[in-house]
Length: 251
Ligand code: 13P
Image (cartoon, rainbow, N blue to C red; front, side, top):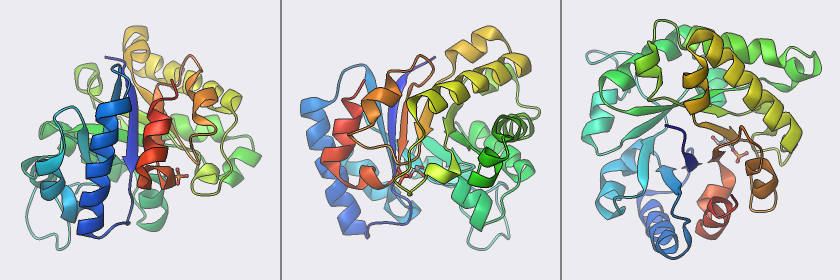
């Protein structure tokens, strides 16, 4: 089902106590100002998940930022989808460009991670997006199409209906350079076309597609006003409860 969602990706920020304070602030402010039709999700570091779960109200979703592509076993340092679910999270971000870029995660790895997440009842937030070079070469749609087709290989329409997609142009992440509302709308619309080809028009229409990349309280309204933009995946601005809630109030 298509929903309005604002998710905060905290990345590798906050010590446990700081994370708890931030989660508490977000919860309190959400109670006062979160529009009823908007779902809020926070994605703190792994170490914080069980503690934050304890203090988060039911209505706010909890996400991990990554999961292993394997189920269990000798994979030192990895955290499985089942472990994430057992820590109380309901969502997991998969394929963030920082994972693709710095940890060499391939489309095939991400495909396995998506399947692991789905098999363990987690809702994946599956990220795609081109880098600056690809945008300048004019191959951005091709890049995103391939990321989707390869990442979603052998995932049925039924399974896919649980997935949230996030379009995050790499050149807009943490750079202060946001995509224009037109660029975001064009790509989100293109993503729906790709999903229609893989699955069906109905599935494409029902998919929640978030925009991410230097989204802030000043630009969220214009981004979210687009027909195919269903919300945001927020980095830097999600570390400030006021900004995060202001973004969530921007529909
Ligand atoms: P910024 O909002 O800091 O640009 O980060 C976006 C992002 O990567 C969210 O996953």
